[in-house]
Length: 55
Image 1: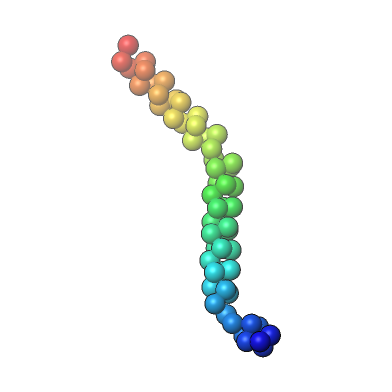
Image 2: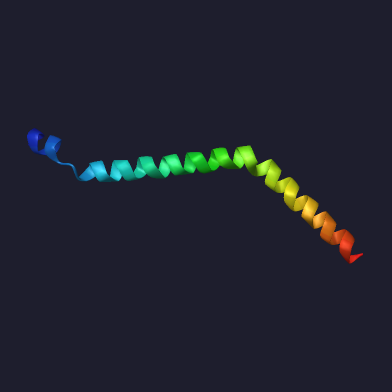
């Protein structure tokens, strides 16, 4: 029974999938931390210019 359990590779695919999803989530988090402020400022500037143009 132990040999069969050790040779069973069905869980390996799920583990790899979880690791890939975790790495993607980690990269997304880091990207938001690095570029979030810059994107926010760009949207605020664009909104301000649009607001001034409509007055």
